[in-house]
Each structure stands twice: as C-alpha cells, then as structure tokens.
Image (cartoon, rainbow, N blue to C red; front, side, top):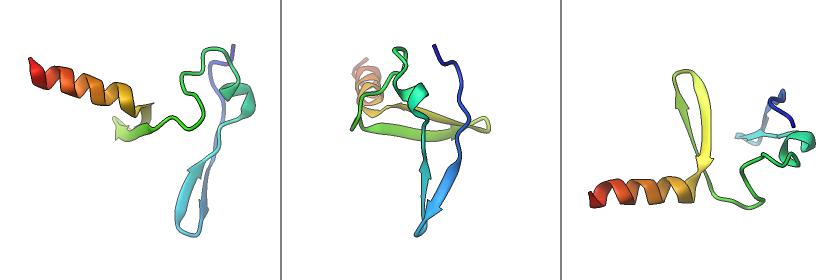
Length: 65
C-alpha cells in the first residue's frame, strides 16, 4: 500500500499538469478510475482533488433538505 508519493507540477504551453506515479495509481486503495471527472480546489494551503460526480450528488442532497 502506497500512502504517499512525490509528484511535480509541469507546465506545457501554459497548461499545468500533475503526473501521478504508477505505483500510486495502481494501488488498490487509489480512489479514481481512468477518465473519472475530478474536482480540484485549494483549501488551507493544500490541493484537494475529489470525484466530481460524488461532490455533485452531495451538493444536490444538501439543497433538497
């Protein structure tokens, strides 16, 4: 099980990319499948990446209450 991996931010033609090591993405506890739509935000000085579909459903559920 991989708890943590070092990554870098790369810039190509004005776009920023974060590449995740294979040992991290192939770990059984990695929460995202290829081509999953993700949501990213900066919170308390950290980059938080979440599954966009799950986040969307949570917002809808909160609105319906």
